[in-house]
Length: 290
Length: 236
Image (cartoon, rainbow over all chains, first blue to last red; front, side, top):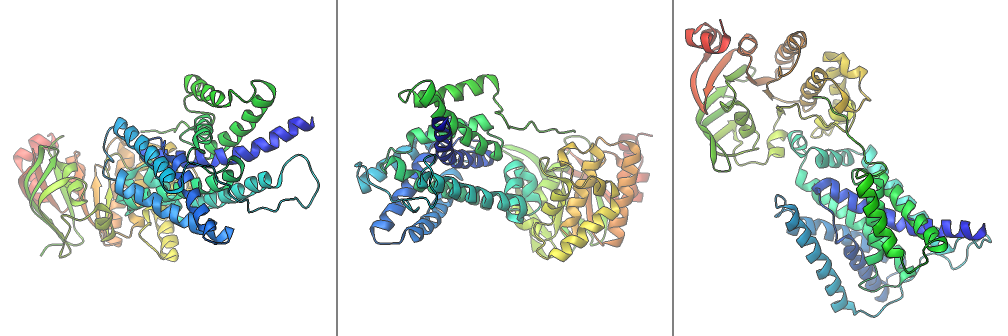
């Protein structure tokens, strides 16, 4: 029983990372109808930036915040420089550009910081103030930080005019223009936010998997699985899907398939969901009368 | 100079030219209608004013040029477009639709007042304020589109076939409200309609469009009494 609880709780910690990435992917998917394959490498690159800042002597939380700001601006720049010009291009062009971005970020990180693995600090205390063997301090910290971030994002989209405008611009760009919303700006903001969310995920998982240019590969795969399970049209669903994948991964790894087939497991989930329930668990079917 | 002045307007979809040198104008506070059959270029004319198609020619509004400007900036000058198909933000609530309409209005008190005014014109929208807007009926969505346009505190409203697909009673009610809005809120209107009888009743001036060209213009009364218009557009 203890092992089951332990696996579930540490699954939630991984799930928090998957949930963040799933959310970032879904946000961009909602805005431009394409799947951002480069989300993981963007997050990895952001994490390297934070690592560099810390190496230069910045305190952790300063590096954390500066990294968020840089990632946000970087995300906006990627949208403006690369994706705005190909906005009307076919899906395959987008896929090619996403793959290119993935490789470019990977190579740039390797070129700048080398491919050797690096330690990335955890901002959380080494011991919990209470005694438990069920969850480690960093894992608990991951869940906490992620929940705070998700809460802020929820409040932003639900209760602020800009959040509402972003949702409107993603769902009905023409109507959004006609009420005076700059759809371009909203797209840029969306990319910036997605990049910042990814950066948080990267910084949170780096102490666990160690920092190196390929660290996000498996993680992004689980993020994708979370997004697909939850539904690509549902940000909330993607978050739930991400947490679910974290727990499933751990339980399947502990009781069913062992750790060698972990990545295969994610792919099997993706294929199964796409075959039998393409809208995902929470992907909503919009009711519309005409 | 007229409030809205359009000169030599040509519009293009890719290589296809949809408008071939349109001239028309609209006086402040007036209601002008553009009549014509399917494909005459009515919707394109409205989309041209809002910068949503590629155009040649000049469009001036209250003395400033609109041509070449981005849609969101044109809107900010006080031009509210009630688009073909109503443009409902289907996945948010009725009230959020109205809030979106007031996106360019920064004063929260003005937004609250606007909301009350819209609910005054359209009590049905108030009943459905928390309902997902995509589930409203066609008539309610059209009311919402007009309401959303009003939230912008517009000086000019562009109305694209507001009667389309609605029951006659609802159309009658809607056009009465448009008339009130024009009179009491001093909102000028450019109305595109296939239902010529309806449009000529509401408007003071009319232009007749055929395949992207103005073929006739005048006061609504003159147009309504013209023999050929009566036969081709009014159907009696």
